[in-house]
Length: 234
Image 1: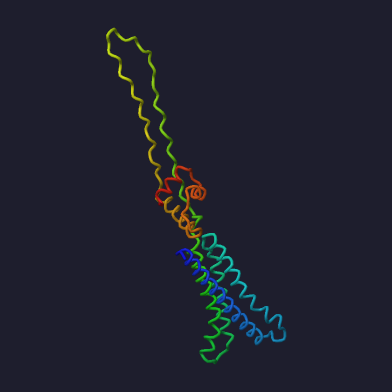
Image 2: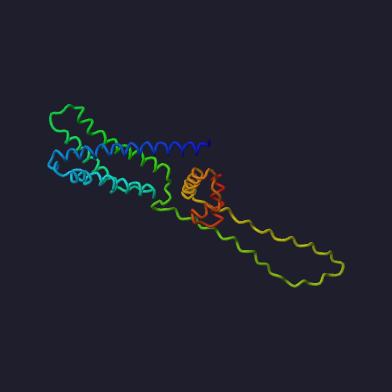
């Protein structure tokens, strides 16, 4: 097993554990809030008793979905984070308050653990997502460097040949003028670093190095510039 395969397997196992932990903690928190509602005015309506926790916990679900969507786009959604944190803190507070006054300290700990564990588990999942997905859409992407045009061919002026003088030595043959080579393409350091992130993500996903054609399509640069960047990444 190669290193990228081992890392991918570890991420999948960690993701599955985090999902199971989140579902279990969410269910325990939701069931306890339903019991709180039963002891505070909704005992006669089981439907309303089980629907009441949704007015709080669904804010957490909505915030987590928005955070996951932002992570897939390589961004951070402050509004989604605030929504998730506010809903989680409210759930923790209501779970603890629902125990009632004068109870043993361990009862409060048991009530607070599920919503707190769900918040930590989702935070760990988001950390892995942000680490695996490169920032492919930076706020100010570096502008591709302009490819210098090749120098114009030298202009030669032809002149009429004069007849050689009697007994004059034959003129030496003219050597062809050397064609100047095109200067190397200058690549900005910021563009090379951005291309390195794309190349690393491509290698981690496919297991093979990125080729100039794929790199050119991802960056949207001319072929000469893509070749120069690929040479620096080698």
